[in-house]
Length: 318
View (cartoon, one colour):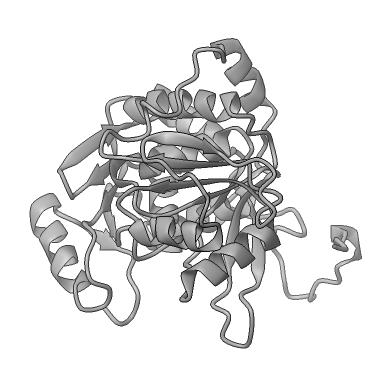
């Protein structure tokens, strides 16, 4: 990819402030995702960052950081390195935010695509197109397990385990499939061989300029196209949106769809819960799983009544 040097950009004469020119009243957000969580945990450890409405589970910033570090060590113990792509299905309950931060905090790339039918065909295409190294799913997502076994009938995909995939011709890049169960991810990934010092050293090498996410287009005009998003672009999109929608810095309780049904809004809301900790408090409410379109109006109203939701990031059909 060819990058445009800011010195080569010709600016309109009437444009006084811009990020290209280096002048703006609102500075860009500089921290990586992992740094943002650490800052939030230090400044507001008891602030509730995420609420999982299904089960009424409240997770504070310090609890989230502690859980993230456990899973991050587990990922490192499985051989995940900076730049590796991790495909995550949405059905992880109260471990979803933890997985999101754990993956990005060590410089791996978070990939949560919507997989169209026939699922086995599109799953195989995505894994090989993006060079996915690890797939993390849950036994509740039976369609994902069925798709994997349809691709490779001899595949061993055991719940509550890390299933090693080596020399599988259908997936040359894939090395492991982690299948969570009702006990969550904490009992599957923790690795005592990774020390705190190793984790800190790995996380310190991650910057906001590193890739953080892969998103897919809808594929309206053909095969879905992959878009690589850096941590800085994702965080600044959220930060600058909040500067516009919450310019007075009031506390927000932000509701979003369950990640089984929606991807971008849910990810943004979870990240928003920590990046603006310096001047406001944001709590992300992840609504229960539901029937798409028909069911979300019910769960969002329920969240409003139960948690006093002030904002909701939702699609027009709702």
